Structure formats: structure tokens, C-alpha cells
Image 1 (cartoon, rainbow, N blue to C red):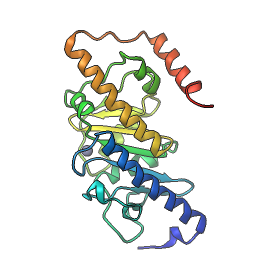
Image 2: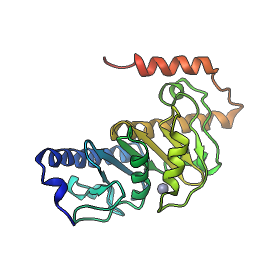
Image 3: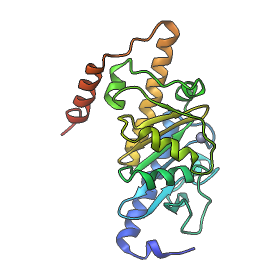
Image 4: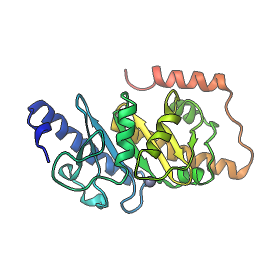
Length: 229
Ligand SMILES: [Zn+2]
């Protein structure tokens, strides 16, 4: 185990911030009712380094602390002594290697999003909140086994050039990406909310996708004008 990455004070401070942010954001998964027991994880790239911080494997959410978060290189190998990283670490690492614009990644098996994934169905864009956040449907990728690069390859191939920061994985769950870990958590919360609403709507009748020009206009307004400037 090397102590190299933390020898530089600026990098050490960036790692400390990432540990705190990733630890705090796991509480948002619990608050949003997106996770059961120890499933689900958040990671963040440490800006300006080839490092990432991710949840330790199999530790209860209530017991997570910034120091318990695992610092890994972008091959998914821990670079300091401590807990073993999440079993999804190879997936996160693959996405960071292939998508340099991604600063944070979230994985959950949140109920409604995973129900769509279980059916292998993309969530159609039938409400304005989906046009805003996802810019269209939430896509679904094929089933892939956990552990190696396979899931990471699906995420990269579906989300590259796609407006949606969320992808459903057939028979598994959902991964979201963002410029920061907070953005990825927001996308995970919004994805579950949209999945729930569209599921309820679909149980009561046919779904009517929004016209593409309306989706485009809503997404542009949300990205360029929404919120405090
Ligand atoms: Zn999973």
C-alpha cells in the first residue's frame, strides 16, 4: 500500500473533501428510500488526480464515516490500507476511465426504476420532469454480470452521446452519472421519482410520449435557465 497520493497537501485536501462528500451523499440515498440494507453505492472522482473514492463493501449505511470510504486508483485498486471497496468498484472505475467528463457515479436497485429494468423497458418520456432532467426517455441496457468491466461497458455505450444521466440495466438496477457526485445522486432520485410516476400512469392506460420538439424545448430551458443564476 502506498501513501503517495496523500503526500501532496493539495491532493490530500481534495481526497478529504471527496471522502466527506461521498459519505454524506450515501445518507441521501437512504433519505430518498433508494436503497435496502447495504445495496447501492456512490463514488466521486478526486479532481485533478487518477483517483476515486467509493463506499466500502457490505458496511451498514449508519456506520459509514468519511474515513471508511475507500480511495482507489482508476483501475479500482485500493491505494491505502482500509476496508475493501464496493463490489461495483470495477464498474465505476471503467466509467471514469472512459468518460473523463464524469465526476460522480451512483448505483442503486431503487424499486420502481428496477421494476422497469426487470421488464427490460426504457422509461418513456411522458412527463415534463423527465424532459427537463433526462432530455427524453431513460434508456435500458442489456443484462451484464457484476464484477468485471462488462457493466461499465454497457453504461459507457448507452450513455455516451445520450442526454440522459441515467441508464437502467436489464434485470438489475440503475446507474447514474454526473459532473459531480451530487449531480449523480440528484439523477438517481429523479430517476426513481419518474419511474414511479410513469409506472402508476402506465397501470391506468396508454402512455403518450411528449412530442420531440416539446422535449427539446423543456430540456434546453431547464439546462440553461432553471434555478438561481
Ligand atoms: Zn447492483
